[in-house]
Image 1 (cartoon, one colour):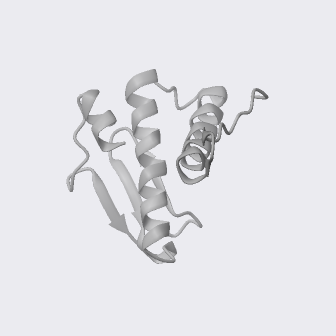
Image 2 (image 1 turned 120 degrees about the horizontal axis):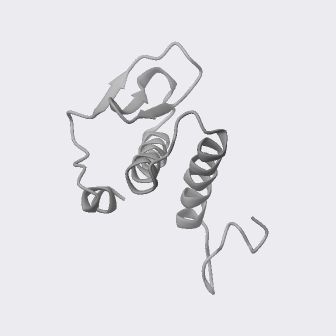
Image 3 (image 1 turned 120 degrees about the vertical axis):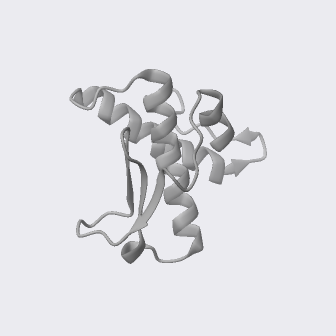
Length: 106
C-alpha cells in the first residue's frame, strides 16, 4: 500500500506518521494535513498496529487519488467501507483467489 500511495506523490515516513496517546476511543486516524495517527494507548499487539497502519494508508490513498471531501458524508462512508473491506480482501483468501468482499451486493 505504501508504494501505491508513493505513486501519487506522497511519501509515508516518520514526518507524517505519528504515534501518540489518544483521548478518543480509536486506534488511529488520518488527516490530509497531518498524516497518519496511531493511538499508542489503544494498540493491543503488533498485528493491531499493522492492521491500523494499513487501514489509515488506504485512507491516505483515497484522499490523494479520489480527492475525498471531508464534509461529504458519502465520501466519508465510501473511504471507511473501502478501508475495512480492503483489509478483509487481503486477509481472507479462498482456493479461488482473494474473496470479494462486495460479492456483487455493494
